[in-house]
Length: 402
Image 1 (spheres, rainbow, N blue to C red):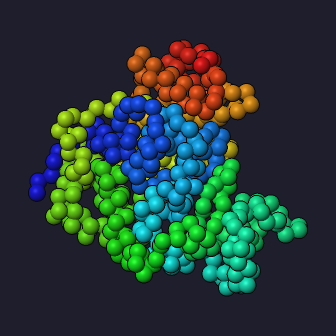
Image 2 (cartoon, rainbow, N blue to C red):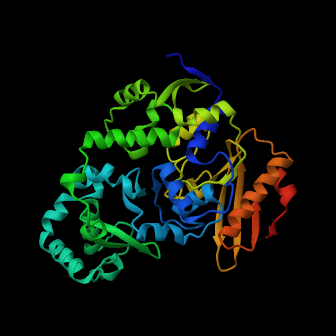
Image 3 (tube, rainbow, N blue to C red):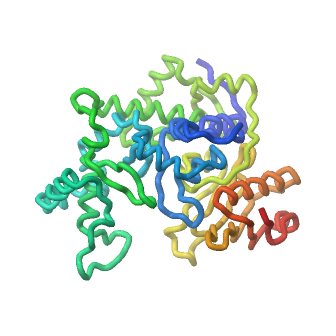
């Protein structure tokens, strides 16, 4: 089969369409739209940093526009989603629970996420904790005190926190809900009473093939090398999967300008035939699937991006939690922002345009509207600007009231 020739702009737009980022939302979001967006992405990565919105809420905002953040919590507590290690810690549609169950049954393969030595050393205490949850109901880590004299710190987990995390990774506990974004753990048997490993679990090879298939559909336009990272698969049978999909016409080969050989999911062919045109401008989370694979973002969008919140301040090139700016099919800038919640102000500390970007009036209008939409969703009453490129500073001065 000869490869379909695509321009780089077409490739970007098809990739954005698969991710739900090609065009603005057509209407005000509904609860089911949140679930549809997560299914379209396959995975919604979790992160707790909240200098602006926490990442999973922001990823959804980028696709849905203004929506109540409580919807995500409701979807989890209703059992429409579950949490587990996928790309990293992620919210995942509950129907995809079989895809990751094999990881729970062999948690020792998950590296630091499961400590076999800890589990062996604390067998009795872990058994007591499970019995406590069975008899008294769900628990949070915060329900248990730290040992006297333990120093605080990111990895200075108290014993019960370690017990809970190991039990979660082993699939014996699930996150039944979140309260103030804190995990609430309950027995898997209570969260999923109808699940039976003998009846419902997938063998690892079948689960891996299903994850690769999800990845292909969520990426839409992709290179073979991009597939395995989506679910952080190791030694994934990518060549075998592609051969099967090509034979079944689930994907077709493409040749992309300056990118080379790739593949297109056939669900996007109608969009290609009618002509793609990106019209959306929005802010993205650092953990958005569009950019979480930094190499993919560089290859497809020429966007060299790193998350610098764990980099010492003096060594940062940009800022603590910098948000990529998507504008009509391209990643054209990035902002270092903070939500001042008491003052109800979205503070944009600095705005960078990518090299060669010269904003015209249309782009200035789109960016102004995108910042305003984001600020309103965060409950801001004004946008304050600090360091801006000259074209933006001239147009916007020091900010505006919403």
